[in-house]
Amino acid sequence: MLTQEKILDALKDVKEPFVNKSIVEIDGIREINIKENLVSLKVAITQVGTQEQMMMQQQLVNAVKGAGAESVGLRFEQMTDEEVAKHGGQAPGSQPKSLLDEGVKTTFIAVTSGKGGVGKSTVSVNLATSLARLGKKVGIIDADIYGFSVPDMMGIEEKPKVQGERIFPVERFGVQVISMGFFVQDNSPIIWRGPMLGKMLNNFFTQVEWDEDLDYLILDLPPGTGDVALDVHQMLPSSKEIIVTTPHPTAAFVAARAGVMALKTDHEILGVVENMAYFKSQLTGEKEFVFGQGGGERLAKELKTDILAQIPLGQPEIDEEDFAPSIYAPEHSIGEIYMKMAQKVIDKIDK
Image (cartoon, rainbow, N blue to C red):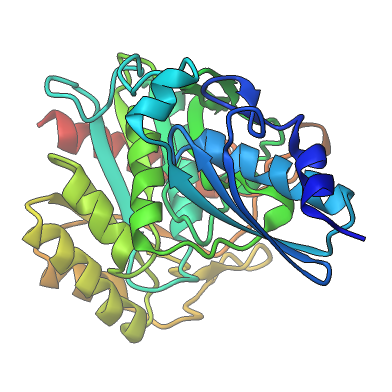
């Protein structure tokens, strides 16, 4: 039978990440409620809304389930400054240099769309890798918090290293990568509301040990104009934007909203990418316009910008030894389009 004593005993080996002491020892377990085999905990930690909290969250769940619980609910709260000092912690201050600091020369490039399913993340990861192939120092934030996919698309299996309050991005194809997917176990859904998501996004900018001389940071935004996209727009002092659409009129119509949002937040639109623009037969070489024509052109005209690329339907060649299911090789016909697009982006920004 589950008891509070049994649960506390199971949790004594879980350490609070910032003071490196048992969460039980520092009286971090504020409430334990048991209803049959369902357990809910209220937990106080020194810093909420961090990557370390995400990792600790899974440790707490595993420990309580190991004690016999079928389901575990968690609520977190911030310890007071007095409690933090008592346990040997300190207020945030020794954090890595933030990309949001004044004087940082990194160019932010947000990739967005009006709706899902248009290949926005595919464009993001291939733009990032193409820029890196052109000799640029590139990072990418998978800011699509609910629909994170960048690690999988780039074939990343390792996790970032965490040292104290600093987190080091994973590097793949010369691109530094950070994603909510690194901090979620077993592809679990994210059920947080806007404010907590905003904190996590802020941490991606302020607590990640990015290269100081990063040329470009690609932001793979969620589709539409919801909380996360708005947080990013308001968080960044300035950003370039790339709008992704398909040729279909509805996709282009909805994508226009994302473009208008960028303009209203004083961000510069670099251009439009028309993805799935056509299918080119390998047998005949003929183009079939599966999703119609003209959507990208109409969107670019409405936003008073250019088309950066029209990318056909296709699939990268899969290398089982160097698996990355969405990354095109530079010599692939679609990879060549991405390389030309990356050079256009560089030229536009340099102007």
